[in-house]
Length: 130
Image 1 (cartoon, one colour):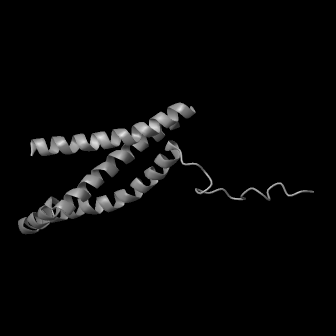
Image 2 (cartoon, helix red, strand yellow):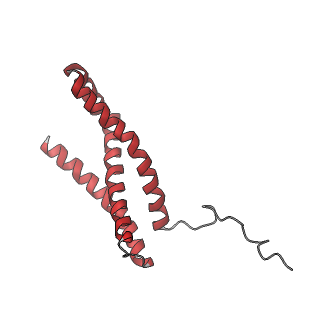
Image 3 (cartoon, helix red, strand yellow):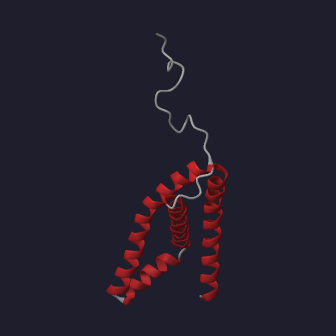
């Protein structure tokens, strides 16, 4: 009997598969979900500062107002929006829709484009209101 698996890998992995939008967005959804834990610590830090003292709150607001703080908050906003859109995409699948290859690919690309667009819109409106 011949070994038919001799020339094929026994356990395919990311180096074997060609990355496609749905696969990349699935990986990004997991990464953004894990990153939200860090963002929740930032929100808790801000709430604790608000409850502690005006001086500590001012210091935390100063830290968030620095360039690095603004970049972190911008990244957190994108992570939050991207994960939200990914969750909506998964909810659509849970309802039994969107399994067609072309539609799923368009939905994955829309997830990325939409999350960037909505993040920029949130920050533009935030600065305009400020």
